[in-house]
Structure formats: structure tokens, C-alpha cells
Image 1 (tube, rainbow, N blue to C red):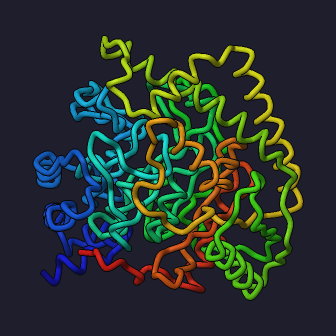
Image 2: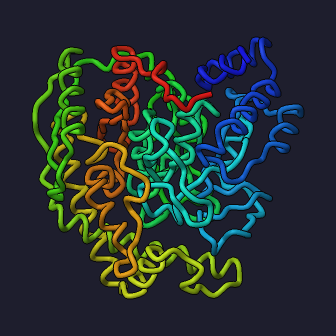
Image 3: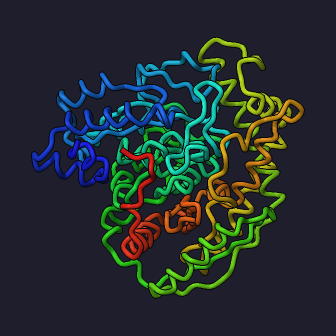
Length: 477
């Protein structure tokens, strides 16, 4: 039991180091992670497709000699395919869909030596900023089981926060890495557009809104993992600017004196909870104490235009994804196979014309140029990650008369994170603040396009100044 607890408090970098030194075997790490999963998952509902036998076989077999050899990992049940294991995307429509190949990201994760322990819960097609699919039921936040863990990577976030694994796969089309990072007290970085390949199945998703990476406790785990997965795949339509040196080296480098703008006002006009405002002001003071030049400023963003354009692209993308899976599986989509919100977006997307879609994409690109111009004068832009602390489960439920209620409720909940998806720039949620209820409230930093390195340097400095590794929820192995 002592070793069980010890592993749960280690980050992935430390676990891998102990394997390399021969102090622990991969099978021991995997057995301990399985034990934690069996103990905690009945309360959390974070893992929906266990792969325990396969993981133990891998742990006792001939693992690749990668930097994370033997470390247990979880894969979100959305976008990234693992050959021979179902990928439901949180939907009853795909409950029996089994890919016959690995995605490029999964292949790179395997080469890194990671052992996939299972697939984690996600809202249907990753649409909502919570994780409550009808197919599998709600995932619970380890800090308060009645609260949402965020979404759409809420299953991964809950599992990492609870200590089942040290880090887990996540992806992000409107904040789905950073939202659950904020809700679960984790570090979550969305990389620059196309930093990680989405091959071989797609070139991009929703015009480049979606990015792949992970949820972690430590900044160094996030940096080291991105070193191993970043880079274009064969046939990718475009790729991110190449990094200057390994991100792992950035974690140990001083950021220098940065120009950091901060804002607590949402471009959409959404009301920001006082706890989220306090979190930003607290982070701004900390940045100033660390020697950075901190000023209150924000780019000019037409909030209503952003919401309208983003919704158009998102609805069209949702329809396209469902039609693609219908073709792959030989099914005809029917309303009863989907949640009301998903079907509502599907029908909305079918009404989006080609010119409508191209206009929406152009408007998002125009906004991206304005934000990029603002970032020429700033090294980072600090905002709340979310407009509220973790909300009660059920907050985004549809109603009989309004199937899209949850989507529009989400617009007010996540007024900042989608900006980075629209612009393609990197963004990160950093766990620096807990409110009076003991709930984590993340703060968000935008970086310039292609400059994850600066965000890693800043994040590591913040982590040293105010360590969060030992802050663990009551529901913890």
C-alpha cells in the first residue's frame, strides 16, 4: 500500500526515471494504476473502456525504449484511435465502432514507451464543456463529486487529478484541455495549431480548431510529452513553426522579464464570477512579484461575431463528423441515436451553406489577425480560464423545448478558451488558485502563435513560485 500511494504522488517523469534506474518495473506501475482505477473509478466514472489485460501484457512484454517506458497512460475516447479498441466518441451511434489502425498520435505515444490503461469518458462528440454523455453517464469531479470535471476531456482530467495515472491524453476544440484542467486543478496546455498531427485520417478538424495533447500535474511532463509527439505526419496539409530546442529544456530556463497583459472582461459580455476575477488578479500580482511587466489590456474582439462564426463552423463540423462516421459504419443517422443537443447541432449544420461556412472561417481568420497584432506588443495575455468555478453536474442539460440550451449555456461558461482555437495560438490553464469551497479555479495564458516555449518557461516559473503538486483532492488514491 505504501508503494501504491507513492506512485500516485509521482509525476510521469519521476516514474519513468525509476524504471530506467531499475528501481521499479513497468508491471509494478501498471498494477498499481489498475488497483487505483478499480478503487476510484466506481465513484468517478472516468474510465469507460478498461484495457487492463492488454496493459499488463504490454508491461510484461518487450516495450519500446522510449523516455516514458513503462508509465501508465489513458487515452481519451475521442479523435485518437487505438487499433482493435472501440472508439465511441461518447455516442450511442458509435458504441460498437472499432478502428482497425492507430492514429499517428497513438503510434507516437506507444513509441514513447507509454502503456495505455484504457479509454476515458467524454461528452458526445466532445461538444460540451462537461462530461455527462447518455452512453456512459456523468464523470464526477474528484474535488467535489457533485460538480462537473469540465469537458470535453473530463474523464482524463478526473483520472489524473485522482492519481490513477500521472497524465492522460486530451484534445481541445474550444477549450477541452484547458477547461477540465481548470476544474480539476491540473496543468493543461493546448499547443499551437498543427503542432501534433491528426493523421492519418484527417488533415485538420473544423478548419483547424482542434489540437491534441494531454492533461498533467507537472509542467515538465507536459513539455516532455510534447517533445515526443510534436511534428508533422506524412501528408499533413500544414504544420506549426518548428521549435528552437526541446521543450524539456525550456522548463529549466528562466523566462526573463515578460510583458503580460491581463483582462477579466469577456469579449462576449458574459458575466465573470468573482472567484475567477480574484484568480486572475492574484496571478497578475504573482507575475509582477516575479519581475514581469503586468498591465491591464486586451485585444479588440467582436464578441457576438466570434460566437456566431464559431457556432457556424462548429455546427458544420459536427454534421460533417456524424456523416463521416455514418459512411464508415454503414449507418443512417437517426435522431433517436443521438442526444438532443447533438441532433440539434446536426440539423443546424445541415443548413449551413458553403458560402456561410467560408464567411465564418474568414471572420475567424480576421479576428486571429487582430489578436496576433495585439500579441506583437505582449508576450502573454492572462485571463480567466472559465467564467465560473466548477459547476454542478446537470448544468448543461437540454430541456424538452430547447435541445440547444446546453450549447448556449456553454457560450457563457467558456468565453475565453475558444479564442485560442480560432486563432491557432497556444494557451494554457495553470492551477494557481482555489476558492473558499476548496475548488480549483484555473487562470489562462495565451502565447504568440508557435511559442509554446515561452509558455512552458513561464509556467515552470509559476510552478516553482507556487507549487501545486501536493494539492490533491479528497478523492485520491
